[in-house]
Length: 107
Length: 113
Image 1 (cartoon, one colour):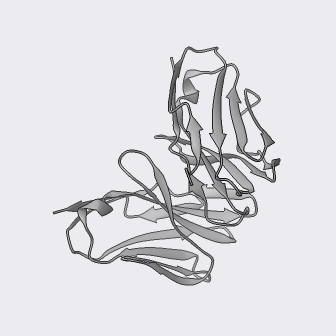
Image 2 (tube, chains in turn red, purple; image 1 turned 120 degrees about the horizontal axis):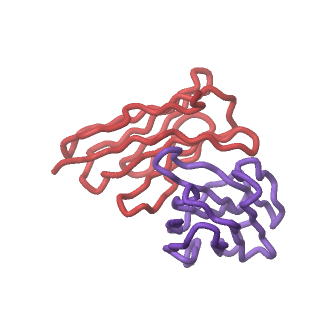
């Protein structure tokens, strides 16, 4: 049983397209994280949120606590956005991770 | 700031050997996390320290794994004896507080032959 489910697993988009990655979870959480893992392996924290919406540049993250669902949106996608995006939720001292969404943006 | 520093970046060892991974968190950060990433299991939290004290080690796979944080600027993750199934990338991350944004180190790629 996976506490965190992401969709889609793989996504290919043309440069400039609007992209949405979804994350559903089954546990009560104190926070949800979106991480970006570059092809070289490095991990960057994009967002940490517990309610509402956050925006950073072309990235927007939303969360609906009642529905236990979060989305990561990328506007005007660019090849440099190609990476694996990982959703993680925190409940108490436990972290549960999604398996990641592999995004490829084609020029 | 140099960010989270991990060493070594790559480690190749033989089964049965002791392996020590090192992490220097960002100065001023009070929380430190050790993660393991494999193709099969993805990212997993191994252990979490707050103010140098282990808060939750329920993710540590077995007694062969141990972690210490002797001071605010240094942590180790030790595997003794190592096994091929321990092959993975081990990440260290730190945050100002336990519930704040985490900053990840570059990872240590461990291969146990």
